[in-house]
Length: 449
Image (cartoon, rainbow, N blue to C red):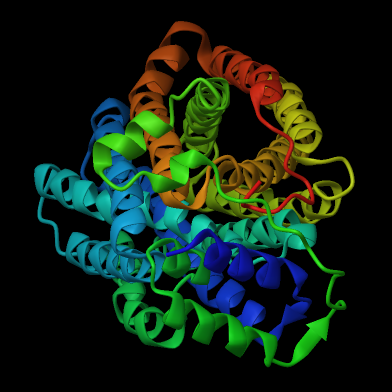
């Protein structure tokens, strides 16, 4: 591969308007993202049901969630390395297959140990899918609209989480062992993996970085001839050459590339943000149905409240998608994290139904808007040969927090009740908001810069 070849692919992709091919990549990846969210969301409703059906304590059921997140931590780090090695599309399809089959098998689990083991395997697929998907889409997106496109991709999470809330509300309480039927529905990604593998193109930036210039040219030419949906071709873009880290080819070189003098502050800041956001998000949203039940609301009523709270995710993504190209990545991410910190404290203090719903929806709005901005800035932090590795390891560090949060929340609740739980979660949001300012601002810049 020559630098000229890579620069040609980069500049041509950055000049493009939004085409039908962009839409196919976005919606194809977004559907996988939504299925991922549906699976993660379902487990919060499954946990709430198993507490009563299997007479489990909240402490023991917390390990169901933690096992999944342990798998996600490993999956994110390994998946990122594999995606930089064998390609974005192949790893994306493989992850969908792994967690789809394992989720379907979870519906047949006969006891807690079997369910925990299967959730670990589910996590392997889920953990790898998210950072690889965001890297994949970002490498197709033109520079001037890349942030907005990634936030729209992340908005598919709200679609999937809403689907999980609907399944939790309509299916789990309605039939005997409804949680099994809910998990069976979660096996859909196994079939969708075949569509991803054959219907979506490989990233042309990755192909060019691997010296596969003919294949990269075929993909880019196809995008240039694809019907335009909106926007106009940009003026000539002088693409910057990739940084020296682009030459990293082995696992060791890629990992060391994350911590070079030029990159260590960005990587450290990114890992802090990922850790704190994962701790707060999963500490809150995995437990909200169960916490509502503990406040005296019935199972169906708590699922209904959770569904309403979940719906606020969509406007959160919409506002973040607009602001990220107006304010930039850091300002948008910081403001939404600060809003999450305030909303978490207020939700912990809420006792009436209107206040529970209002503050819960505010938490949902700000937290998911922050997720959209975080997924936009993460792949932009690194060059092509490091991009999936960097995104995967940041997500993997975040998953460590998601492993810790589920068992810690019951302990915090025993110490000081729900108010203490959400004060702690608010503190993590605040730390993440501060760490945001150690990231680079990449609004409107080529991925090669």
